[in-house]
Image 1: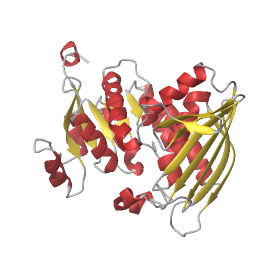
Image 2: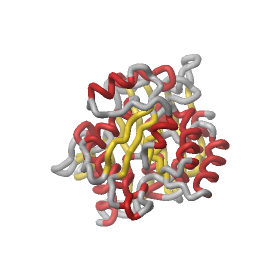
Image 3: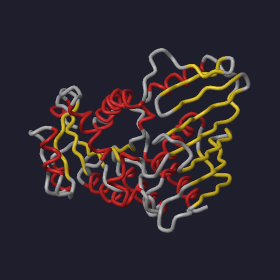
Image 4: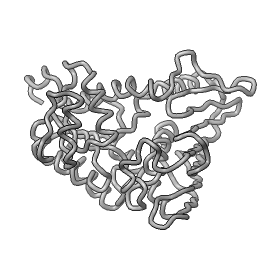
Length: 329
């Protein structure tokens, strides 16, 4: 960036305006305008212009991805997964930064080639795993440093859903419930694999089982044994196993006790058999805007070539490789 641009807010554009695009756009509109401004949105849906106008009459609905890329410093790629790599390459070719939604892609070989290519050209890019900015994660790190549970011995991930897709995702069920791009392992399991990798090291799949009881639809149950570095990691997940839209736990068992992250945003430590959360813990619906604010500060830093801890393309590629191997089991 030139010295002039360094004194200006990062112009964030959006490619794809489904649930994730809208969430980050609303967070960006509420962000410090000296840090992030919204340049506009491209989505081929005919409803995009009206949807944007209902949020903010000043928002621009661009006619093409090329137009929003040209008008932006960084792009949030929130289109269906099959298009992620192509848009990533377009952003790199234009010299723009990118924050890509997960999964990075579903074709591991092609993703590896594209990631090697864009990183080799010095692209500033990351993947939107919000656990990079999670307050609950901060508590877990603090408890580990304080030796609350002694020596960590294993991680257990449990994922449960009343239905798939979740009730608020049904509009995107055409791809979210297809085997080619969808399923809860890609959409949800990947977050917890990323978290395991961040805490304990590179991922390796040891064994896996995956069930597809409904023809043409995504998985309904998984079971996997992995390692993150030297740490054993177990992940199980199922649809129809809870009455909640979405229930999850990520539990670290140590030599002296257990700590966990529950339902996306609640850090808990086990005390005399009971799970206890910090006084400032809030459910995910309240935590999400605060976490996205932290993510956006890091997007600004990434775009300017400054230090940040957003999920790297390499981390996301590693997670993707594990996920696709589980789904093929």
